[in-house]
Every structure is written in structure tokens, then in C-alpha cells.
Image (cartoon, rainbow, N blue to C red):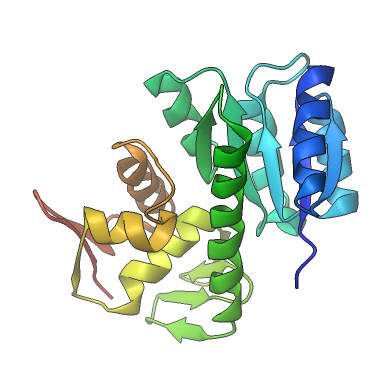
Length: 226
């Protein structure tokens, strides 16, 4: 059984203590940090499977911290979930723009939070088990083992959810995936995300890969063109 490592980043000691207690009860290995700069240092040393990140923090906020974490090659595979009282649409969109995998609104009951965490880790682990294949689409190569995409000879590191979304669409070029199928395959039925989540991830993929690979089928979903 994997002994999952979880890093909690929050500037409120009571929150750190509460979350640490509940996570340790579930046999997770827990690391804590009270600010973004320290969180990056701890993450590089501990190599957590999951980071729970608050938005409002002194120094650099959670959004900027997430962006910095995502820029580090050593942490490309880590799951980042915002756990915050800020539940506005623009805050969620900014979180996904920075590379977050999930956005969990506080307050949340401990049992519900543990369920969300287990779902995130389970989906991450099942994806890793099927890793190892490299698919060549000519100008685009997908390396599932390294969570890496090579576009016209240039390596592009994608956040986990962007990679999983691209991998899903590219697994069957030309097939139209509905929004419901994408939510189920990439985020899971037991993880609640906003309606704009897919749109944000698709837009970021197009910015990095170009518009020619992902087509929008209005009112239905998306398909990959090789």
C-alpha cells in the first residue's frame, strides 16, 4: 500500500493542526508549511503526492505559489488542491489557470474532505499504473511516464490535469468526448468542479499546443485531431 505524503500549506496554526490530525488518523504522512516560499522548499524535499494549498497567505499567495510549484520539473506529477474559504468563480478560475487539480471550498466536514482526498489520490495512482507508453502523433509526442509532451521537438511539461485531459482526448483521435465523459474520466464523479473547469484547461492546452489538435464540438464536447 502506498504511504501517501501530503503537504498542507496554510498560515493559520489551528487549520494546520486540525488537518494534520485528521490526515494522520488516515495514516497519511503529513508535512506542514505556513507560507508559500517555505512550501516550495518543503515540497522539493518531501516530494508529496498531494498539496493542500490555501489561497490567502502572507508573502506570496496560494495562486502564485501554485504557479511556482508547477514550474518545477521535480514536482510535475504532484496533485495540487486549493482548500480555501474563497469560493468566487474568478478565484477558482485563477486557481485552475495556475495549474491546480481541484478546488475545495471551506468549511468542509472532515469525512467529506477525506473522501475528496482519497478520490484524488486514487485517480492519480490508477493513472500512474497505466503509465509507460509513448504515443507519436508526428508533430506531437505524448510520454505518459514522464507526464511530458513534445511538440515540434520542444518539450512541454503540463500540470497533471491538463496532461490527463490531453491524454484522454488523444487516446482515440477523432472521437468526440462529451463534457460528462471528460469530467468522469479526468476528475471523477465524486469530485465536484465548476462548469468552467474544462474550458479553462482546454484553453491552456491550446495556448501551449496550438489550436489545430483540439476541436470544439458545439453543445457536445471536444475531440482530438492528430
